Length: 161
Image (cartoon, rainbow, N blue to C red):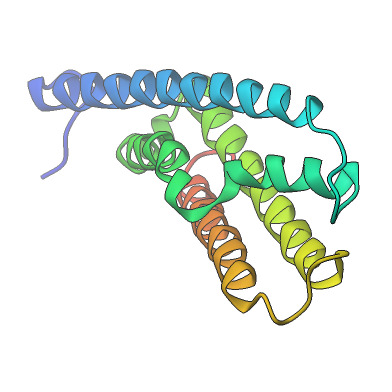
């Protein structure tokens, strides 16, 4: 017994999908504004005694992909994925774009996390002795990869998936 397009249940489901899409968009915009603040801080960094300017910039940029900061991206990812699963073949273009933006952002955070790990290992003051730093940065990359997989799997249930 499915929902028809004109049933009260379908209207309720559609309103939930639209609400989740709006929440996802607003939360993603909030995350993007925070990204601009981190990028500004990244441009203001100068070289330090034990590391060069690019290592310091990567260190500052990597902040956005640390595991404790991932819930800021997880909220829009969860909202978009849930809305996509609820919408199924009726997914609208705005929701499809949001889901892909979040996935691409998560993929970017994976790259930043990997670069942060490599900078720690091969940097001037780094090495494998800093295993806690490597683990912390890797945890952020793994968490971002999980968000990417969530969005990818949700997108596969949509018309363009």
